[in-house]
Image (cartoon, rainbow, N blue to C red; front, side, top):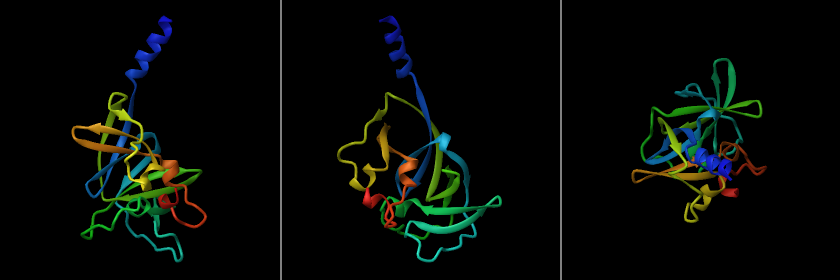
Length: 163
């Protein structure tokens, strides 16, 4: 019985690290162990007939990378003003490299279970299928994204809307 209490106490002290990214004012978290690069995307080549989420292809240190607009993937409205300094997060999935294009990259946060909550029932339905949960932070909500779900495109080419 004492071991179970100690295990629960250890779990309560467990933390997870997230890279924060922004789409407009909305803050999302990506598990740091999934993030391989943070860079400014350049030289993106459009791909004809690709789903709207796919911005195109780019070269990242000699590798061809599929660039995905996270704003479009999450069915968020277009930016009100054109951004010249988008950022990208390099992620590996099943041997392929992807770049999630975001409006901005924040800091790395080490968060404990005390701020974590399951996906709220009132979270936008377009996001429920790609969220692992949320963290409430000083009046802000950090939506933790499930990278596997974000990168899982359906056969029809529609992403989170189909989830």
